[in-house]
Image (cartoon, rainbow, N blue to C red; front, top):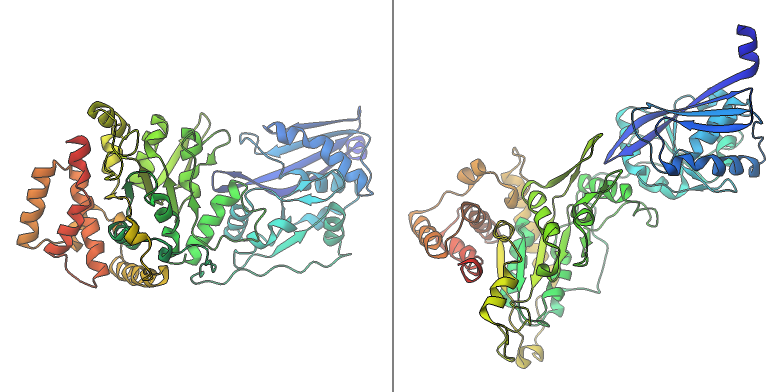
Length: 519
C-alpha cells in the first residue's frame, strides 16, 4: 500500500507570504499531484482571485513549455485559518506544481520565498505588498526572496535581504536550477532621503496672505492641523498645495513606512521603487468613510493612511459626508486607525498633517468685502456646524483667508520662496528632535500632557493671558493643550528655549474662530 502511494502521489511545498494590513504572514503553498480525474482543487480559505488562479497558472505553465499534469492537483495554502487574497500566490503555486511533477528539483526551492502574479504567457506581473513582504522576510532571515521585476527596487530597499527580480516563469525555473544567473539587488542607503526637485510649486507664487503663510509655516514646523476659512478664489487651495514644499525631507524610516502603505494599496507598481517625497492626498468631498479612513475586506488603507508622514488636504470640508468627517476624529488624535472585522483587526498608521479648507457660508461671501452675502444667519450657522465641535477642536490653527486686493496681486516685489521658509522649518524640527530624543513624541503636535508640563512651563503673564482667552473664547481642555503646543512651535521658530507671552498671544489668535462658530 505504501509503495502504491509513492508511485501515484507527489508532493511539493513553496514558501510565500500573505499581506494582512501591513503585516506579511508566512504561507506554505502545498501541491499534491495524485492519480484521479484531471482537476484542480484550491483549499486553504482562498478568495475568488486565488480560486481563479487555477486557469491562469495552467495556461502559464503550458505556454512556458512545461507539462501540466493530467491528474488530480490539490493546492493547499496553509495555515487554513487565514484568508488568502490576491494573485500573489500564482508564481509559488506554479513552482510547486513543477516540483511535484519532477520538472523542477524540490531542493531548488529550499530557503526561497516567492511572490508574483502570472500572465497567461508566463510573464510575472507585479503584486501589491512587496515591501511589507521584504520587511517580514528580513526579520525572519530569509535566504532569498523572489519577486516580480517591477517590484524588485521596492523590495530591495530593505537592507541585508537578497532580492532576486524575475520576469517570467521560465526564467524563474532556470534561475532555481542554476541555468541562469540573476544578480541580487542591494538594499537602499540609510539616512534622510532628499525630496525630489520640483520647481512647479513655490510659496513665491502666492501673493499676499501673510497671516495664512505664517500659519502654514507654524503647521509645518510642529505638524499641526490647519483650517483655512475664506471666500472662493482667495488662494486656500493654492496655499495648501504648496505646503509640501516647506516640509523637511523624510528620514529613511519614514520613507520605508510610507512606501509600505502605498505598496499594500497597490500604488507603487507604476513607480520606480521608493516614495521619496512626502505624500499629498486630496480626496474629493464625495469620498466614503471607508475610502477616507480605510476598511473593506480584506482591509485596505484609506486616504488618512496614504497621507502618513505627509499632508491630507480636505477642500470644501463641510461638503464631506458627516460619517466620514466623524471617522477622522480618532486618527487625528491617535495617529493610527484600527479596522476591525469578524476574523481579525488591522491597524494602519495615520500620522498626517491635515489641512481643511471651507467657505465662511453657503454662498461663500460672508467675509468678502467685495461681494454681498445673501445667506440668513441660521443658514450660516447650520453650514458651519456641519463640522462638529470635537472635530473643530482637533484643528490647531484656524485661519481666515481674506480676498487679495489688486495692489497685492500686481505688486512686483517677489514673495518669500519656499526654500527660505523650509530652512526655518527644518531648524525648528531639529530643535524638536533634540528635545524629544528620549521621548516617543517626534513633533510638538504629538506631545502628551506630561510632556506639555515638562516642556511648556508658562510665565506668570502667559498664564494670565491664557486664562483670559479660555474664559472669553470658551475654549475646551483640548484647545488649551493645542494652544500650548502651537506656542511651543512658535518659540522653536524663534529659537527660544522658553515659551513667552508673545508666543502664547500669537497661538491664541489662531483660535479666534471658535467663538464665531460655536459661541
